[in-house]
Amino acid sequence: MSKALDDLLDLLDLERIEQDIFRGLSRSAIVPRVFGGQVAAQALVAAGRTVPEDRTAHSLHAYFLRPGDPGAPIVYTVDRIRDGRSFTTRRVVAVQHGQPVFHLSASFQEYEEGLEHQEPMPPAPDPDTLPTAEETLPRYADRFLHPSVAERLLEARAAVDLRYAQEPPFATAGQPREPRSQVWFRTNGTLSGEVDTPLTHTCLMTYVSDMTLLDSILLAHGRGGWAVGDVVGASLDHAMWFHRPFRADEWLLYDQESPTSQGGRGLGRGRIFTRDGRLVASVIQEGVVRVPR
Image 1 (cartoon, helix red, strand yellow):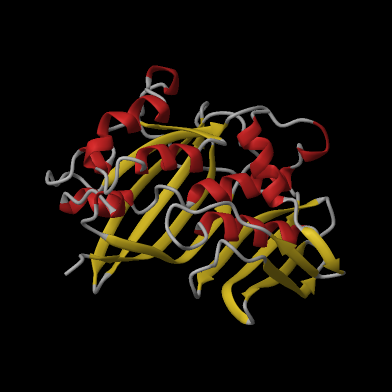
Image 2 (image 1 turned 30 degrees about the vertical axis):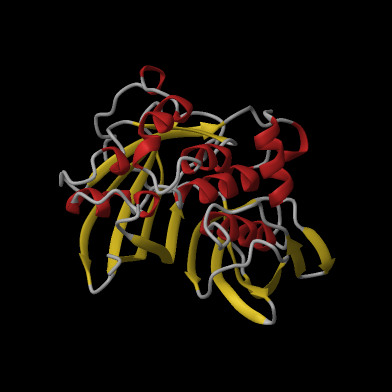
């Protein structure tokens, strides 16, 4: 594994301080708050560690309540809502400085056979033909708020090989286009040993799912996002459904769109496919999207 991926896995390896209470740290943030995908992934780790290993996460529903402080630990308290014959339900509250900053409900299921169908995978360029983030971001460094932003974005995403299938919002600011975007992603390294578990792969996907989902909102209005200073945004809530097994260290296509934005909020929807076309997850997120005055 790359050092960056190893560091991310360390971030997800929560300290257990009581039977159902865990503590997590944060990585340095580009903005003065904890990255939402990190909190969601850590909360899912906490929930998953109280569930039998033969049950995997099939859905999560979360609310971002307050900005997280990257300089302070986050305490995750797990409430064992239900342990049924097939399903297990957990609720997790993340607390900092005595206040809840995040709330997660997650459901886990023991594998069973059932009816099968899915939407077809949309057309997308082969990920091996696309430029890496290291090649893409520096080309637009002059458009960011500060010359160091591109470098800090790369550092924040170093654990993940994320490739835009089309020009990203910060490259096309001022040019509205269809509210749809695609990225390919996988971890920068192959998971093995004790970290190579379904829970780890699911938590890594959860981490990445918050990186680009609201991009399609920006595209519809020709906005480049917070990195270029013409939009202020933050995640409000986040929901995911995990349909089929997958590996986060193999290419996954994140197909994203925005059906609406209004009232200072925007909605993003995403579908995640394996390279061979299996639909493995669905994502919906609402976020604050405001134009600075």
